[in-house]
Amino acid sequence: MSEYILEIENLTKDFPGVRALDNVSLKIKKGEIHSLCGENGAGKSTLMSCISGVYPCGSYEGKVFYKGKETKYNSVKDSEKEGLAIIHQELALSPYLSIYENIFLGHMDTKFGIINWDKYLKESKKYLKIVGLNEAPEKIISKLGVGKQQLVEIARALSKKTELLILDEPTSSLNDDESEKLLNLMLELKKQGITLVMISHKLNEVLKVADTVTILRDGKSISAYDVKNDNLTEEIIIRDMVGRDLTRRFPERKSSPGETVMEVKNWTVYHPDYHNIKVVDDVSFYLRKGEILAFSGPMGAGRTELMMSLFGRSYGFRSTGELNIKGKKQTLNSPRAAINSGLGYISEDRKNLGLVLIQDVKTNITHSSLNKISKFGIINNQNEIKNAEHYRKELNIRTPSINQYVRNLSGGNQQKVVVSKTLMVNPDIFIVDEPTRGIDVGAKTEIYGIMNNMISSGKSVIMVSSELPEALGMADRIYVMNEGRIKGELSKNEATQEKIMHLALVG
Image (cartoon, rainbow, N blue to C red; front, side, top):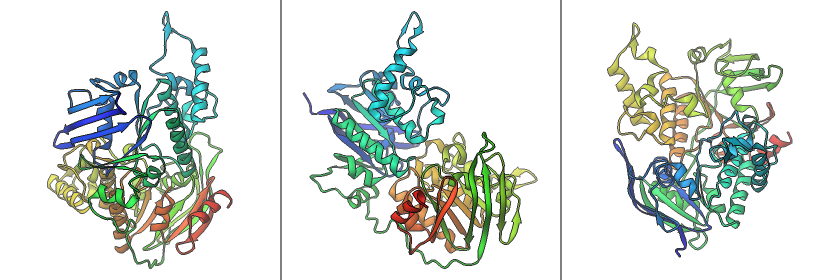
């Protein structure tokens, strides 16, 4: 019997105008944690989608063998029946159903068309115990944080008697503590004989749990390493991912902040549904010209809610306090008013709030700046194309054409489209919320370079980041938030990961 649970031979997958996978071969041993690394657009998620039946047999060339047998999956249900499950980066849970209903959704047995709910309620407790989720099975999914929802997804996969579990960017939306718990769970599942495939850009986590690492670049399998025996390092992975050495992940920048360009005083934001609950509580801060100001802290600290409320009251039932931009008191009641006052906002949720996925690259770049490319309400098509092409080249957006649908781009290139849209508005103050979430090391460096260019041109940047090395590497000052309040402020010279965590947890 083969020691490999999964073998891929010469797999090729084409999309219109793009070869996503080019003759990829890969072997995964039983009972190991195998990590796939590569830049956005390298083909990692596409490869796993071919393996699991998201892309049916016949839509790609090459062969896939699972447990020694060639697969002919036409849907995800086919692969799940054989013990192969995939958990995507965007969780696929119903927010309106309970935990136990989500766990067994789609594979419940019935008798005369009737579901034995008591049976599944009782059985769900077994899987919740395995994943370490101490919540009542009857609890509605929407009441859980992202980290706990991730555990429900894993519990659901285990309920299908999974032997091979694929996790696509499992910790991209989790804080450090939640990520640590999930990684420990993966190691525990490995002890139980489950094989895991982990797609991740967080190289420190890859090296912590993976036994084998395979690196893809431009749709091709470049290299495979045994983590321990090959003494694998982050530098080696990055070199193979991008095809060159990245000597500095955070580009150097001379910092000389000037006068105060934005000041927030006693800002309080109330929950959109529970109108008496303060999500942001009496926050005050200032931003200087030519400065990158970071907001750090755990998930749920209120950072995103603060930024959205400042950007034309995009969040909250109501907000109170004072906002001054360039010395003038502002009352911004809409995102358009915020843009007109010199603010630009890049959301952490690029797919739902930053992009129109069913439109092309060109339209997404220009649709916040239609006044610049139109006259008497009529869009100048040549002007629109000219601007879109300028940002495509300027930000190195990898797309066959500006007419390509944004949904077909990789995460990193989608993020560059969002940045392009904001750059075209030409604001003086950029608010960037988790600017590098879910994108690869090479794309991160490019985004950091764009932020530095903003500063060198006299702009100012407010950056919300859950990655402490990113905040420390890029920011001139750091505000630490938790529970809706600012717990402290650190300059670049005094900031460390330990001090940030201490402020967040102790204050």
